[in-house]
Length: 335
Image 1 (cartoon, helix red, strand yellow):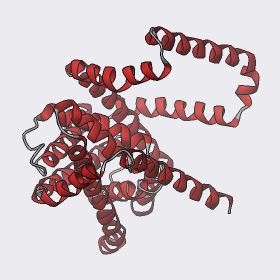
Image 2 (cartoon, rainbow, N blue to C red):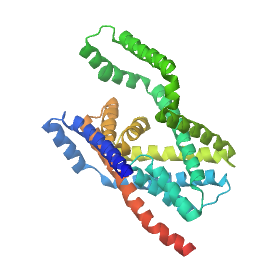
Image 3 (cartoon, rainbow, N blue to C red):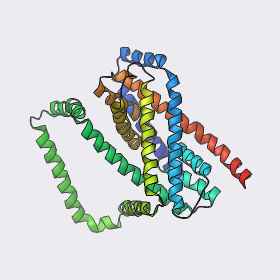
Image 4 (tube, one colour):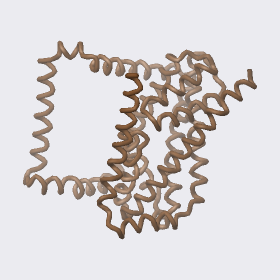
């Protein structure tokens, strides 16, 4: 009963957070802007979603192949279709609750491939660590390559509004002073309360998670073909980039945008999926704000964000359900 209540609360929290972001954006729209968003959807060229689906399918295939490589390094050799459908089920489950997807995909291989759950889960942790490292590298590449535009956006949308709101002439100095003071307070509290902190369940849990992350990262070095693993990882991100770029062709105002805006939308949009489960509500807002860097009005960017998010979510749901139905049938015939 307690677990059920916690699960419901988690689901309600992330759903409520997504609705909050939707409300915060929509309440600022004028009737004319709302009409522009509707017009953007009616005039969109939805045929460009077909290559989006194809590239998305390939990204999942590359992810399944990469996962198989990690399992093979531990002398487990699952069938690729089981791994592929396990990945699909994982994405489908992640729409509901964080971490549920990782548990679900590992449970599939435990059931149909007799791979111990703890070992397959360790490879998933390794995947997440490696993907996060790649994301951090790409994030700094984005900042370095498009620093001027991003800097102007932060100056206009963040620095100046905060400076006016708090009426500070030396806002940067005060901000740095506040952050430094907060850091010093945290360090002092740690040394004062460290004995109690070491016994705190949350601290112990976080410490264990960090330890597992580092141990999982080390397993990459046991791969038989590390360069092939890296290649599959890069192909996954290339597919993500192409998906974003193809979505631009759905709207007349964005069909002439190049790879640079697609790269920015990909990286900043990924943050939306990290902050809110499934990216609901926040992802379209981030897409809209990012595209303003390239002269695209917010209404068009918001419509594009919702179209991209809806297409991905629909694919996760449909293919996830299909995989749940097909898995027992295919494995029964194989057996």
